[in-house]
Length: 372
Ligand SMILES: O=C(O)CCC(=O)C(=O)O
Ligand SMILES: [Fe+2]
Image (cartoon, rainbow, N blue to C red):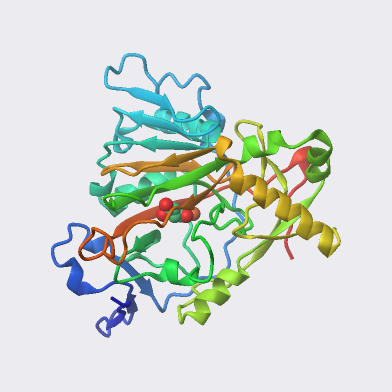
């Protein structure tokens, strides 16, 4: 089935145009129909303003006695790999105290990604969902993405037979995977992202995270020293141009930033490689060929370093929280979208992401991000 888009125009007192990014027919009885992807084709936002940011992990007790309390008999905390990923069962994100959330912010920074299982998060309503995000930082509104109706801060993740946008976009590529750190082109790019799925395909649709701190520490000392003095340009322009080409509305003008290639996490002090194949375009101050060769090396290092990656299978009720300053990630779009295999009507994967903005990146020796 091809993509169906419908334009719905609200009443005169709310002259908003909404473009639906799904086919109504196939979601008649869907429990999460209020979360289906739409595009507000009208609201334009000014550039993001600089803001003060203090990472919640800074005030956290490093031993995390509140979050990882020994007295909680239901708590099960499992390291998924040595370098990245921790899974938590027996704790509801929706019930965490502020002290626990501070410790969680630090745990996410240390482990890169924390996977919470059996959560009620998807059923607590958009206000509480946004509240959890806001605890960690101001919420980002994606410049071009589909969102949840009336809630632009809920970035929609949707791929089903009625919208194959993500696959179409990459149809001329050998794979749909692409490691990135969320909207890293922003001047104060995201710290923590929260992602949950509302519809999990029967198989497939995993997500992979990669440790950018491990990626950094694997490099030889001379390469590390070289990179520590350099910035790279991250650009939102190709994403905006592609959206325009597809007839989508660009709700905030694209920006570029020059971020330190080696970023220091404000709470852990750990160094991480802060480049990603999704948004990093060139290394500032190098000749073109030098920049291309070095970025090619680093992107290959990130993509193929399976010994510092974690691949997570989604379950009903799974919520993932990751720190974009120390990880990159990719969706694995391998489920049976069209129903060519055993899935009769094509399978849907649907969720939403809440993305919190962080500090202006800082590198080694106080090297700061700059932009024009
Ligand atoms: O769908 C996924 O697994 C990840 C999508 C993504 O890149 C994101 O939510 O930031
Ligand atoms: Fe992402």
